[in-house]
Amino acid sequence: MMLQKKIIKLMGVKPKIIPKIEIQNCVNFLKTYLLHNITLKSLIVGISGGQDSTLTGKLCQMTIQQLRDETKNMNYKFIALRMPYGIQCDEQDCQDAINFIKPDQIFNINIKPAILRSEKSLRKSGIIISDYVRGNEKARERMKIQYSVAAMNQGLVVGTGNAAEHLTGFFTKFGDGGTDINPIYKLNKRQGRLLLRELNSPKHLYLKKPMADLEDNHPQQDDESVLGITYNVIDAYLEGKKIDIKQQKKIEVIYFKTLHKRFLPVVQ
Image (cartoon, rainbow, N blue to C red; front, side, top):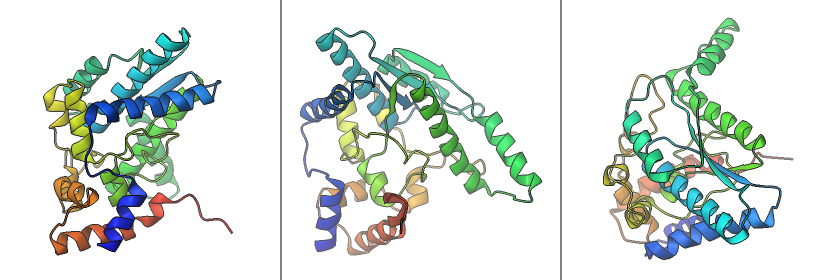
């Protein structure tokens, strides 16, 4: 239990939340950062059609709207990015998320040509990447695009990772894990669902099975199948609840195995 308490403290997850209060806490967090960094005028989020990016996008749009209302500065804006790899199977969910968020600006960039060119260049050097590595390349290509858009719009790249993913290292190092700011970092999966329900999100977006959908050989494979443990169990662990000892040890093994992903580069 001592290790569980230590991890919970590091992750910052609360055992219980009041969704309405947490929503405003997240918005205030983003607002304060923007107001303290006066050269920044936009928030950038990649929208995938899943729970986390839908929630983060909505929080960003609310932040920008409140900033415009309070400061009368119309230069603040929220930019949503759609970055499919070819044709996305759940594209309708992405469009439903966009319609729910109502971003100020939307860019659509297909990352497949860039990934194929990169893979071709590596092959010419005798490096044949695996399907898993290609999946990580997709995540990093998307982050590269977000930073390019941010640089041209005085923007911040906003992360969509939650505490359950952070605990398990279920993100790509310097891909979706490499952002400027993250408002939902201290929320687990079920808490994120509660916030979306409070915000009147379409139900199918927050009840959808979480999936990274990065590997070509395993399309639409859900996160829990990869992790070998459910988010309900991970969430319970993060809320300080007592869970099956085998599942607890499994979570902690995953936590230590992915420890390197939660640190900045090692220096001398």
